[in-house]
Length: 460
Image 1 (cartoon, rainbow, N blue to C red):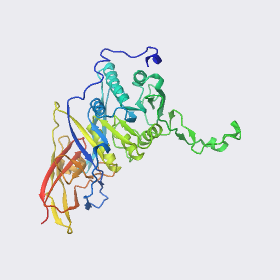
Image 2: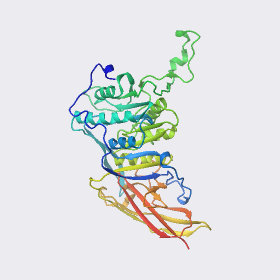
Image 3: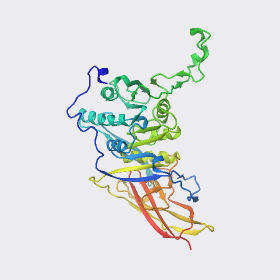
Image 4: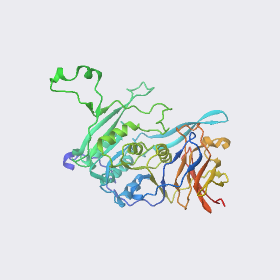
């Protein structure tokens, strides 16, 4: 491989040390999500919940919250080497910035803006940045199938450095394309040309990579004159359109704050961009992965395109945004594994109070159960939580709680607008039992969650 590089590579002290590591010392919490979303527009009276599918863990799509280095090692230990057909990553750019999510909430009739830290892109220096990227690229290559490929999404800050690392890890002979994604949007600077493009570097694991050509519409001029004047009568326009080049100008950033796709997560990429990448470099039924998943665009694209997926991010806000969009999408059931650093300090807990459940007979086999949330207090909300609905993102119910939470019903907003109403009570139809054991899990706008379990007697 090094012959194709003519001996040129990036070198720094400690580069080759401990590249392949054991998973870090983490515990874990695992839960399964069965998307069954309820909105304000739903009839929240009498939702039936006795037919939740039970799936084998191996068949579930996977989401991980935690250090992706530990997750990559964990996947290798679990037998995923050579099993992933496509990896897309949108890693830190060496921008030396904090990325915040700005949302509006209403309190006592007035709107206020709240800043939430999504993630930090602040490596101590260039060496630290290169080391963390290099380690992960080496492990990702091991996970790729022989037909697999990787797309690395960067910008002007670091693309020139990472390109050299990719040449080393995957070989410059396996470099396929540098895709230039051009987009619009305002910029106030007058000291340089406005920076309005990203680079997406595409490498195959080998020469046998998957590629499905993509097409763009012909220009109006081409449609009017066709190809015959230039190339002769035997040439005709393809019904699919013109073959797509490596510069993409037809997909814009998510610019409107009110766009349905906008989840208020910084660096969120458009669904159309990921769908194009997935369509071009994988086939239905393939397994795709995103180890810097952000708001979960890759997972949603895979849901729409019949691909299996693995998603990972260390940010609680990222995982919560991903979870919400998959619930709203009514995605296939998926598993969430939260890696827990035993040495880290626990977060300051909020307060979750529930209404006393009411049970009444519905028919010979079913009972109607009324339940919900009566109060929520967040330690981070800057106001007294009189109108605590503005502080809640969504909440979930496990109606057959066994100590390990399974999300079987979710009460969410139809759009990620925290000024929209969020129902706090609902009634569900369940099989008659002598006793019920349930749990409610609440999520606030800061990425924190609380589980509260409760047991109560059924109807006589």
